[in-house]
Length: 111
Image 1 (tube, rainbow, N blue to C red):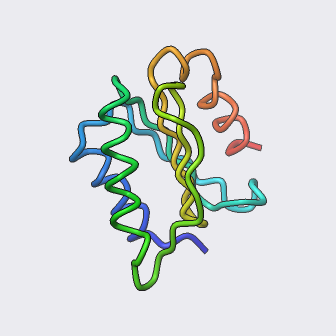
Image 2: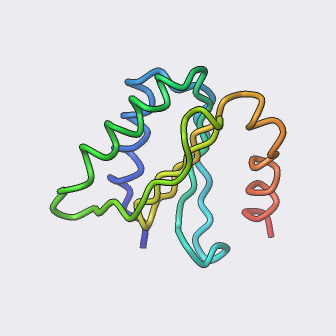
C-alpha cells in the first residue's frame, strides 16, 4: 500500500528543486509494480541530477521507505527513481511530450 507521507516527501523534494508540471497518478490496482506514479518535467540535466541525488540521499537509508533503484541518465532526458510504492519519472519537456506517458497513465487510471 502506498504511504501518503512518501508521496508528500517526494513532491516536496520535487517542488524544492524546482521541478515543473508535477503530476501524481494513483495507479493502485492498475499497475503490478507500484501504487503511485509521479511525472515531473525537469528543464536541465544538472537539475535532474540534483533531484535524483536528493532522493537517493533521502531514501537510501530511510527507516521505513526504501530506494529500490534508479534508471537512466540525465543527459538522455529521462530518469526513473523507484521507491517501491512510488515511482518517479523525471523528464525534460521534449521527452515528456514525445513519450506521452501522461496520456497512458490517465487512461490507466480511468480504466
